[in-house]
Length: 115
Length: 115
Image (tube, rainbow over the protein chains, first blue to last red):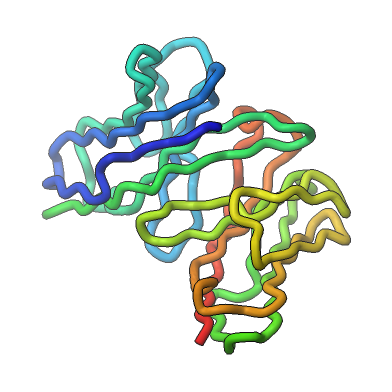
């Protein structure tokens, strides 16, 4: 069965500092990997995704993520955090099943940005 | 832009009541999903549907049922609400296809409190 681990429940960074959110996955085949962001009171929004090709993927809002097969990781990074990035971030692994598709989410990392 | 609308933002129900959570999407998506979100547990899939009148159990279907009579509408039903079903419920939709090419679009959630 697929699973996702986000080891950091809370992270606090200063505005302008760099950010890395960790994600480790478990999946038997080549995974589809995603990062979603949830701002307070909102649903989840897709930041970026990976399936194959270049292991460094670019997303919206200046985020990027790097796929490392040897470490089963898909960490999210941003060079300079803005106060508006404060939100909860979810890593997810997906698989295609029958006519649909199924995502398994991690438990999330709450990001706080200090001004 | 895809819109997934959940009919209620907040709901308060009593133990034992039958509860309906409604979700409508406006993009003719084949797939629809219900997740519940709890602190420290992330998002867990309750049920999903990849066609009208088709449904599949997710990871935590116990105590829930679903209905999909029309393509745009997916209802989550709590037959007899219990306090452990107090949670945030998120609806999502996606077009047919792999989870990579057909990412989820989420509604803003319904926060259900069962007293």
